[in-house]
Image (cartoon, rainbow, N blue to C red; front, side, top):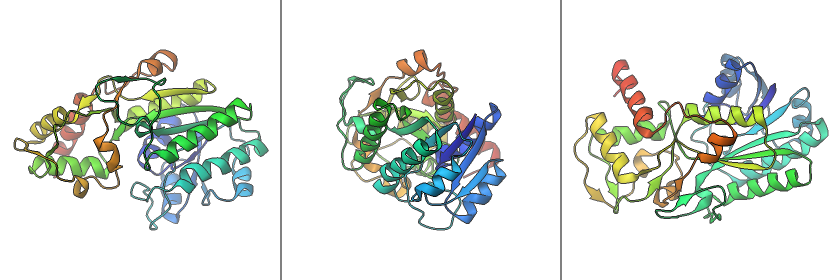
Length: 311
């Protein structure tokens, strides 16, 4: 399968490209800077230069492509290859998807995967959240809900085979927010927010890539899947464990902001409790997290950093 990927040099994209190539797929990545073009070549992907706003260019780029993954969320803020810190914009999340759908109709590409964001659910306390749970997006997550609606309408009209993945809180060894969080916890500079009882659905970046690949290969039209590990964790428990594993001091309780350490992570989502279930993805996609809980995932990252002498 030949797959066109936007956001291919972002956090999830950098894991997805090698995941697809390892499983025999070819990748065409949208390169929005010169540096991202070079990174795509280094990852053995084909680079297509552009900003995703030109439908004609996108139509040409989709020639010979079988499926699309829309991961891009931000507008280039610099000439860097990595997209992680580019500011999120509706015109990219929703507008670029609309352009991709128009271009896909012209070029005959049917399968479109949209990996979205668990924040569209809003706060649900201790209740389990499934794909049937009503959405309550806030201002930050509303563009993701709009993009979902756009893709579902296209699928209902039989113009596309759309699949929506609502990703949990993605973490990775090379993610700035993961590094910042562990750095702050190790030095006792991050506190538990309020009572710390909110549930956060965790997802290692490699498992995010696995889920996207499975959605591409199975293409269940019009389906929505929650993608997270097997055990949503309360913020207080997560932080205490991470601090201990990283060699940090016991944590105080505080309501102070976490933004100095979390980069461009959507801070409004940190106040949400989303006890998300991945049961449907496991049953219908065959999703099996390599890192079943945050314990295996974060411990692997911390151990890797210790071996490398990363501070």
